[in-house]
Amino acid sequence: MKFPNLAIMACLAAPVFAVGAPAPPPARPVVVVAPAKISIIIGTVSLKLEPFVWNGSVYVSRYAATVFPYFLFNEHGMVMIDATDDQAGRLGRGEPISIVGRAVNSEGDKRRLECRITPADKSSGAIKVRVVIPPGFTLTFNTTYKIGNK
Image 1: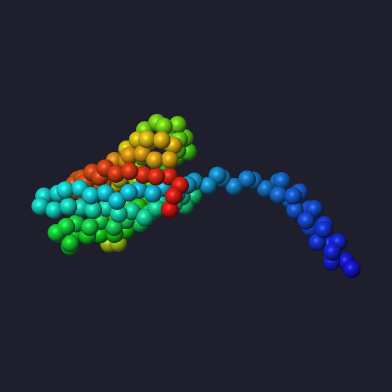
Image 2: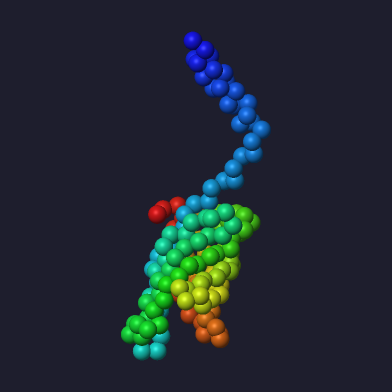
């Protein structure tokens, strides 16, 4: 029987081929941002975000903004946050960081995001998110984040 020998050789050779392969980059954890709500003139705006996942170059999430009682201004879409390895390292050391991002709603309208993140510990903290809506209207949400839980 030649097949068992072939299987043994394949098992022995596998580590040799794996040594030359580059190691995959370390996986980045999921980031969960708590829902936030702010008051506006005669109403409120609520912001809900799905957990942020790393797609290889940016953190990505979906959002839903509910404007009460002005439901015609409700929107949903995608959020992309740029986070460098240096910023992730500073955050891991407990240093506050500023990051930027962008959102695109379901109609294709773009929003600029400016975030200030202040860690409370290695896996959670406070985040201030400024959403800049053209032609310059700004909404500021204060909420919290947690790293590593879905």
